[in-house]
Length: 100
Image 1 (cartoon, rainbow, N blue to C red):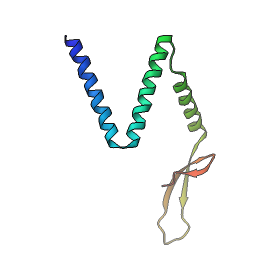
Image 2: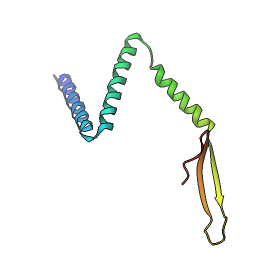
Image 3: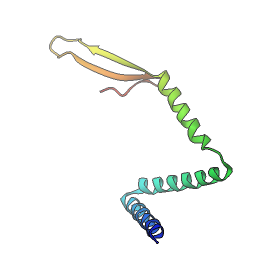
Image 4: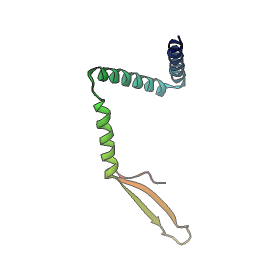
């Protein structure tokens, strides 16, 4: 009985969280669809005794991308009246991004 109760409690909390996400905005419903799809995919893969290879591939691609990017630090001291500031950005294939 305790197992059943726990199972139903989990189901209720999941349902509540999904409802809350649906109420928030479109992004929430996209997330729900994504998680449901992932869950189905993982179940199907587990039946066949495989791991999620697509997720593994995306992780590898991301690590490759981050490896090629270099952090660039620029010091600006053009005019004497401006205080010397430090800008950091990421130099990638699309030029300089993320200046702050």
